[in-house]
Image (cartoon, rainbow, N blue to C red; front, side, top):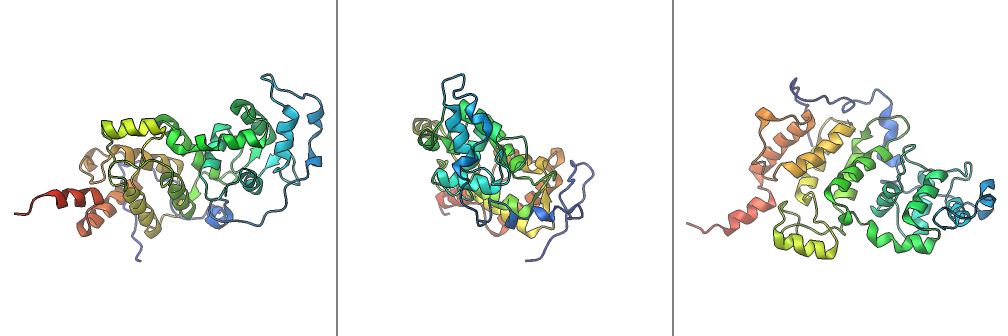
Length: 310
């Protein structure tokens, strides 16, 4: 499909690091990232690679078996660096938990809950120990028992925003500040189209407003409704694929979620004259308006179908 040129607007916020690839960030392509491709991985590190500190302190302050926690980490740590688990190691962690780390959002929720943040795309042994201590686990069985609680539906709105930001920051490569747009598309679908989340409204992801009855039912299930409609995600990812933007910044990433939470699907409460969104979102609105002329969003279609014919 034809590619559209980005509109220049001096009143909008900067779109730094969003176009072009002169900073060598094309190495951050989706084909090299665990969320979009499955690389061949070596067998889990032999338990004999336990680091020497395992024999010094055997229990944590809250009674957990420190040696057992360290042994768990050794089972998926990198062969050449037993103090670190890179992307391949995190994929091994997923296998230990019975999940595909390239497709299961719960692995990202687990890393976020463990406060993994020292370096992008990897976990340190100290972060693992601290995370296990916080989650009160010192065995694979205990950790597997937590898996149902790792669904994003259990996160409240403020926590979900923090988690959404974490997903971007953790997925960066090295010192790069932006993400390849193909990776962004894959992450958005993984995070926002979570099949385990409770959909809002009619159940097909076409509404953003949750009435009291729906909210009560959702609360009883322990899950929050789908935060961004399927239609909104699909339109935005299609828009990204057709634009000349090659990379997305953190500001653009977080602004997209805020935009979806604040602006209705039919754009009825969007005001360009007072807009302070990044330029890419204003262009996204123009794209949405063109699409709506051809086919109204699902919510509007439902309203039209309910109207009596004259």
